[in-house]
Image (cartoon, rainbow, N blue to C red):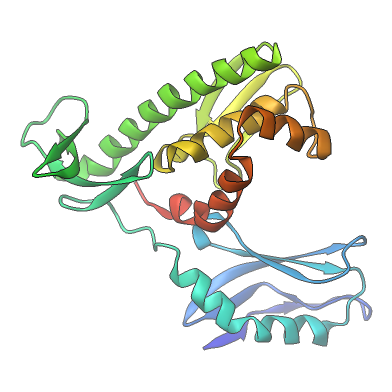
Length: 250
């Protein structure tokens, strides 16, 4: 099933504003943004698959918007099916760490840091806690991994550019993987710890490159590629898989 939610009143020349779209019984918030520079419509699934964003040319007739959304019904079903539905982590469940899928096993103890190991050749994350605290223990471990891996890479890339880094913070953001201020403060989503090493390196290079180029112009991407030769691959991986990382519920 595919349909539209409530449509708010708009001007005659404006596109209708469906507030939600129903895809297979799941109601997703829809934000429509008019862009005077847009020449075509673009539909984006927000991180975690929890909402949709549609960018349209200014003044586009409403019937064209509805026709576009209906044509992309199959695309939405396929893409949303690839996004995990935020299932709570549990004993014998799985979590990716630096791109490697680990089986979650409990030690039977209540205290202690999580430990990455192998059991019978299977990558395993050993955690010590009550069953209801599994998600928190796993996220705490991912935060430590992100801090260790990103800070090492940021230090190398910043030294290459000869740019100082004032500070690094970690958040659980839902709309971006990182940011950089003009003062030299970097911020990252710790969820990147679930991605492969080359993607983590790309993210570090991306934000460090902003210390030199506070934009996304050709010079920025050249700097990013200088720091991380696999920039194109890392960028593509996040575009294709990032929503799945945001969708994991801890």
